[in-house]
Image 1 (cartoon, rainbow, N blue to C red):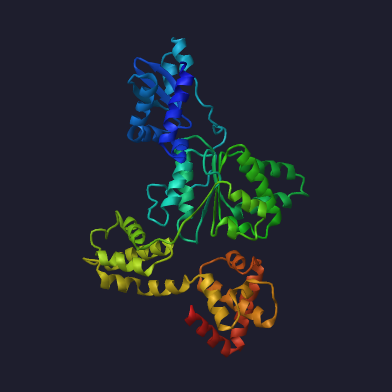
Image 2: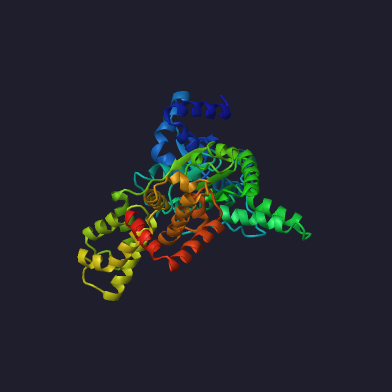
Length: 462
């Protein structure tokens, strides 16, 4: 039996023993290089494969070889670079060189110009804290990071703002750039839209061809495209068309696509159907708000290596976790506020009373200001005896249009969401509509004291 047939037989033995995702992640891209002196040399794509195969699958590989050959071997896992180094060290041994150069061609980044990935290096898997609410998302992210373009393509990550979607996307990108020479690009839908609009703006300036070529080079000549907040393509029909073509070009070339949104593909009703259907081709995975245990883990992680890590009582951590229930950013803000207050006061111990004093204004203010648009819509609809669907719909009768403007105004003043996000939550309206609504209510408040009382009553409902 030749080495090629032997290796295929080994893989056939291994395949039923592991799940499909694990097989694709750890075995699909392995290559049998040679068998020499009772040792099997196997090429692996990344450093992590050495550790995983040695720790988790060594016995499985050994059993498969023994079953086929009735012989026990040692196994050595080598990277492409290590194989090439051995080739350079032993150029006189032509037979050995020929066997060692059977390697996979890997795309390389041109040395002429440094590639700008837009990744934040501090956001990685090591500091991505995991709990039940995000465990599946991280697992899927690690599989994609280890085998980009092979499984879960596209990877669609969704969940409400502040739950760690962006951190996870940067972690995937940073892992890929660290363990391969693939070109990774992180961008947002707003940046993609701006770049596309730049093409349109240059149509009459004589350099449109070059601008269009630069656009395609930026977004289509990558190995991994990571695009954040895809929901903001709503209403931008031409940009959606361009993204559709970009998506197709990358997917057909087996390039990895990673997308995030604040809602599932099925809930992106205002995006083109052909885009939403493509988002379902791979793996949609959601991230839930962190539970109490995960919130405590995040707080401890943020306190690690700080000046108060040995001063803080456990009930302080629980106090913060109980008062910051839906948003990781709010947790981080509370910890930063506590650290700043501690730096000014320099207490011997950070107990519960100290924490309540330090966070009094912050906790009360942020629970209020971080009210969701959804809760505001419900409070306004209940107050004016209409439905949330009325607020999101197209009806312009006074009994609906004015409450809609009030809801937009409250969303702008009580949350930290931007104008585009608010418009999106009100039926995909333009940001200028939100500005007009806010200006209208601000003007009416100056001359209508009764309106101010109405707003207070609505706020009490939120």
